Image 1 (cartoon, one colour):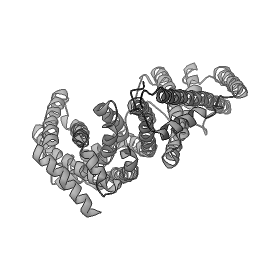
Image 2 (cartoon, helix red, strand yellow; image 1 turned 90 degrees about the vertical axis):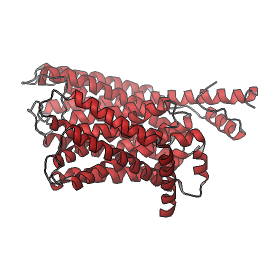
Image 3 (cartoon, chains in turn cyan, blue; image 1 turned 180 degrees about the vertical axis):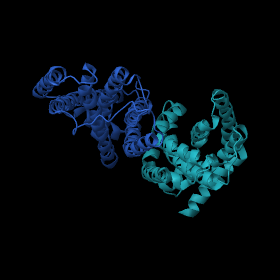
Image 4 (spheres, helix red, strand yellow; image 1 turned 135 degrees about the vertical axis):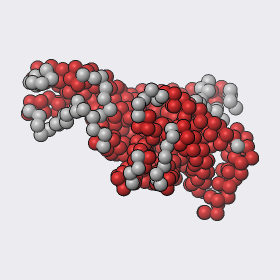
Length: 222
Length: 258
């Protein structure tokens, strides 16, 4: 199974590498959103208090943009039929798509984080590893839901309009947890001080990865 | 005709359509049930407006409690119903479970909307604000949003069969999200104390007996009303699907799609 996942992820990333369709849009969009937030919060005295929220709102919006493309090209070019004919379980397909999305979103977030650090003049006091852990945990959950909902949304009539409406209400607790943890790390605190939030993030990831894994064959039925 | 689904031209689907068109519709809430619900609503109104004592701090506005809280609890009943109907639909692929999900979602949204309207009306005079991001308000609001998303998916999800599958998945995800939402909004508050504008409603223990009786009656009336509306909605859903099925099979006989 791992080999199959690897091949499928490789295919997605190779397609992305040649076209750079998703990454170029999500990265550019992130910078735009950060700039908008920067002006929106310019008059706020303690701008750092809004920092973690701004970072995760940007991640969320850019993610939605990326997720919408996850199945779109395959849908348009008929690649999805090829995938369905592959001798792989649909559940394996879910894990592969989730991993591809995780990689693409992480790459976007690396750039976003760098721009965020510059714009908001942030000094990471050795908390980089903790911050990366928080971002990976948060992104894993977003991608778990995103893979499920994007596969649904691409077949609905309203297409890309549908994804944020499904994703955002469900993802609210994940965003809260991620914002709290990011705030703690940027404020110089350790992750143990927000241990229960970390647990919530892990629980969210596990639950929705499992649900996505189990329901993906249902979604792909024609 | 219906542009949402590609025309089925196989005889299998014709058989399915005919079978669906033949299914009996015996879901209408019985007159007795409707009568009981109506009486319960009148009695609970009496209990809320006249029997229950006037709250010494909040005054008469507190009587909103007897509608607000039962409506909120009924919304949670609806989401639980959707959850089990979703699982059963995915297991058995029986349309009837999808119909249950559809009906429960619509009526549940109605009760949720009652909560969202009565809440601010009550909060404004008592807390001095229409809205506050208190834990219980936030979680109820998010659940209401999930209900709306579910209805959106039903409306724009594509073919009826696809809508059934997708809504079942969302019904499961939404329900599993509830405990996570609960913990997150509670912790968010406790870690970030705000000026206390809301005290615990104190359901049960520190509530006078007459108030408790009034809210219990309110809950009974709300659940009965939910049952009546739910069964009527279920019946409408089933009939509308039968009409669709009949039209599809007629189209086939006309040779339009053959």
